Image (cartoon, rainbow, N blue to C red; front, top):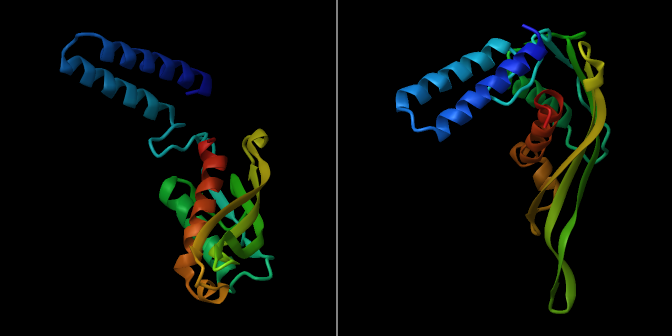
Length: 197
């Protein structure tokens, strides 16, 4: 089924759903129309209820190692980020992960890993950090071999704040601390590439 036909069916299904909610018909009619709408959407093969918007022609994905070019980043960051990115796509799509030349291709690097005071407070007349902020930036190149208009190269950034008494060494030795920040970046990459948010 072509995308234009899917959009037309989806529009009709949504109209039926809207009418059913505003009409005074029985629950059975509403249930039937909800079922019809869900079958229409799933029949298109493009939209799924986890939010992805992947063309049915796209079947494979390849994710190259996301290298760490940030001097302050911990040694485990390259492997952890790359594996977490792969896991996220495997959990949330039906795409087959291949070593290279996938229909969707990702590569990139971690370009910044910065730890700096986030909120300065005056304590006894002296400026002190109220918290410290870890900011991570990842540059991603995404190639959609089936639709090059969706390809992009973009910098993704996110951060987390930590208590002022935590220093960068304790955070670098705690993989779960860094993971909260990288998980947010991975979600942003997913949304930009296959959810079109």
